[in-house]
Image (cartoon, rainbow, N blue to C red; front, side):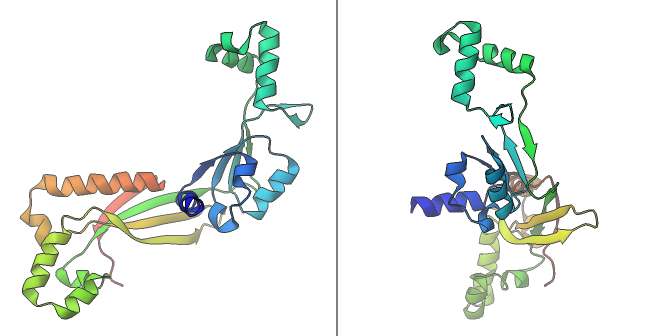
Amino acid sequence: MVKGSLNHAVENSHVIVGSMSDLADFSQKLLDGKTIITSRVTESGLDWMRSRRVAMVVDYSPWLDDRPVGMNVMEAMISAVLSRSPGQLKPDDYLGVIETLGIKPRILYPLGYRRVNRFAFVIHPLSQQYLTKTPPLDWIASMSPPAVMNLVEKAVAYTPPFIYSKVSGIRSPTGDEVEGWLITVGGTPREIMAHGPEFTYSRLLAAAKLAKKLGARSWVWGPLPRW
């Protein structure tokens, strides 16, 4: 159960922080296009990242003489140079030494530079008929009289925004990739007009927060597409 929950969290994340050993069990499906923040990335580790189609790696380990230095070793070196025990050192002490040495994280692109832009399109049903095409409402519509569907239309207007579908596989001639999500709010135009502006604004803000959580850098609002 724990492993399944972790896989689900990784699948729905765009930036993953962990050691190389933490990442070992994750498949290409889970890591494709992701950004990983980790340490001590060797050539063999970079090959492994390529096999998982990782888009970008941030290696925060300092490198000396073409070899990664563990953070515990770095801490011991700074402690010795400053003649203080680790307990006496403050964050500014570490930052001062790191800045003086010009130590910066390595930004690596295992498969070459790969940019993925993400967007969200917030949609809403144009009429009660659109609701009948969305499971499980399609089943309810097939068995319910119009009066019941009127109640369903009112109830759906209060539901939180949710992901209607994901759009992927878009690539520009320059190699940039685009993926995004259709996020739906439940109010039909009739329900939107039956409430005050704050009713709609609150749902749009909730949809925007969901889009931001998904990693979208831009979002727009429009009616449910006809498909």
